[in-house]
Image 1 (cartoon, rainbow over the protein chains, first blue to last red):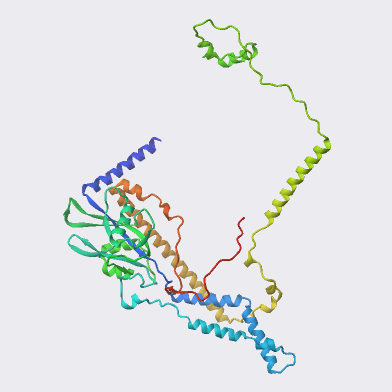
Image 2 (image 1 turned 90 degrees about the vertical axis):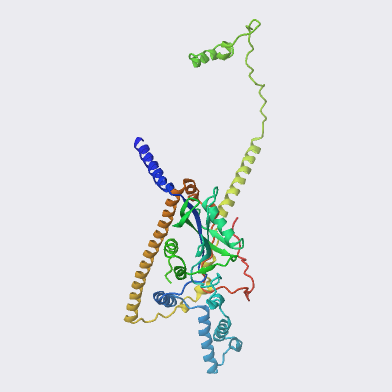
Amino acid sequence: MMFKKLIRAELNFNRIFARGLGTKLSWDIVTGVCIERLPVVTPPLSEIQNKYKDLLYTLEVEKSMKSQHEIRHESDKVQAELLKNESVDVDLDAVSKITAQDFEDASNEEFNKFKFADIETDADKKGDKTSTERCLQKHLVMVTPIKLGSDLKTLLPQGLWKEGETLRQTAERVVQEQCGPELKVQFVSNAPCGFYKYKYPSEVNGKVGAKVFFYYANYKSGAPKTKSNWLTRNELKDILPDKYNKSVNEFLIEETY
Amino acid sequence: MFNLSLLRQFTRLSIVPTISPTVISRNVSATASLQFKITDQLWAEPMKKKKKIDPAIVKAREERRRKKLEKQIRRLEKNARQLKPIDEMEVPLELLDNFNKRKRPQPKLSAEVIEARALLQKEWTRYKRAEYMANVAQIDRIMAAQRRALEKLYEESEDLYNEAIMPDMSLIPYEIRGTVATPPIKNYESPDGEYIDISKKWDN
């Protein structure tokens, strides 16, 4: 009991000590929101995946029983043979029906007529990065131009934390204010998923810099009202500042494709 | 307050009805105290005369009740045995009848093919293992990033930290639509019409 109390006291002391160090320099608390559009279409299979898929398909066919269609096809063949030999007891009604082969041909024709939507969308062709309808097989992260001091930078949407709200509420407010009510997103946690801090060139209101807490949200529908880009991982690397990109990539799912 | 329980035992034996000790101690009145008491009411009434019923009728009544119960039990048992049928588990008779006709001739595999398949299987296992390890490392990394963020938040403000670690109940139930094989066609109208589920409902 005594021991437990001692440990707790020690822990508290450590915490206070840690916080004491932090409050010596005062920082702005900023919430950044990482809005990600998940892939719409499955990524292409790699070489080994393709090979294994083919193997599974052949195995499945080998182990299967004959389907109704195959049986029908076989009986058609027998009927045709009988008809050729001009056998006496051929049921003409049975012959004049549509054969399995005809059915297959018709189905194939219908299938070929059907046009699947192109994986490469209009936005891809135009190189339009502001649309969510691009790079359907990849994760996309939204970035917006953000005014930091005097210069404009392209970062994840972010905003200052206000007294009296939780960080999650700040994150929701930031999305509302900067992207408009049209953009619908789904936050997946009350807790921040990443952290980044930077110093201001000179002190602003007694604050030496900003600590950015990232929140992660999934894109649901709508479009942001401001001009913002949806970027893949590689494009993020080019456009975000190096250290910032590193902290963002810390909590993002790595893409193998 | 000396041995009140003992006192109560004596009062039960005495003819004088129970007087609670507290009353005794507080027996202060302006008039002279009464020295005679009323006995307790017994709340009894004269016994009713028992009605005589024909034993045959009693027996019949009993029988009827038992039969009713038995019937109920039987009905319950019958319902308990009735399970929801699983259509896809029941092989149609038509298929069972020409079972042999449907057998596919097994292809003769050459030694090379068997070898190649075995090698591919091994390669696939290695590939899946590497994939799994990468996934675990990835999850580790993401969790570490979150832990770091929470630690930094704690340094900044304990209240914000406490708010941040609260579970988000609005996420339950969570629904997500996964990736698909081909991109959806906008404003596509199915030529086969709407899909309406007409399968029989089996809940009671």
